[in-house]
Length: 228
Image (tube, rainbow, N blue to C red; front, side, top):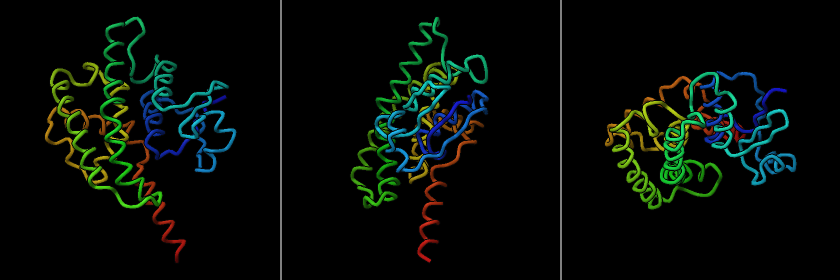
């Protein structure tokens, strides 16, 4: 049975998984597009108890949470495509990799995701306009992280060393979204971060993933058509 992926192609977290599949050259999978009601259906809650996306079913093995899925796929397809995770016996390399993953989850994701929520998701879901005071706070938090990243990235090309890894790719969805919703020059004051992030955005794997901004544009257009 082919790998099944449950999600929305343009969603931030689903795009992590699709980027990794592209890096690995995996095309033999079935994509099941989920609607909001589908996510709360009993069969999906059995896959993802919090009713979120993405989730996968790999011939009966069910897994959710985008970062966990990406690590699973990187190990399953270790022998093909881009090497995105160190070998288990490379203890130091693996330690540096997990450290970089923790940087993203602990210091980058929250402010970047929160900017995306305030500037895009909040209005799209009818929860009112962005709280610009909060946006400014999240931007400041993100800038504090980027200052430290710039020091790290002055020493090597990527967060875990001189080879790209999942830890780097994990930054793409919300980093790109923060730029799209009004902070296009966010990385410019940090030359090493700017070089690093632009190199990630230029990867063919990422360019193959549909844009969440395009998704919301289609939703707005559909709403306007419905009014006519």
